[in-house]
Image (cartoon, rainbow, N blue to C red; front, side, top):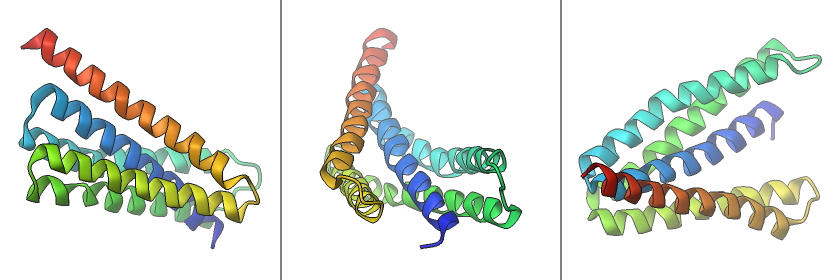
Length: 158
């Protein structure tokens, strides 16, 4: 797999899963509004995809011996994967009740993250299980904190 594609896929997909799920869970806990969650997903898909792509772009530019074509490819792939994977979370939210949509989204997101972590560790000769536990641990911590914060906001501002 091309280096710029791998960078965009790894960063874009990981960011899409963790950011979108965190936002969904926090918004659902604080508002219980399907409309707010849909708006949040669309905002993540557009604004955060551009932000992450620019962040990758700037980061790649600072690397020693950066090649402009590879920098732009990594930028484009990051945007594309972040945008597309964030949008996949709309499907359960649109078609299911919010409680079921959140559960389906968590399973979908953690499943994607698990496959990515496992495959990347495997391709780099690292411990697949250690990488999987590390990445899932961070993701689950974000989801727990987002849920806690959402409930805290609901309790304080309602």
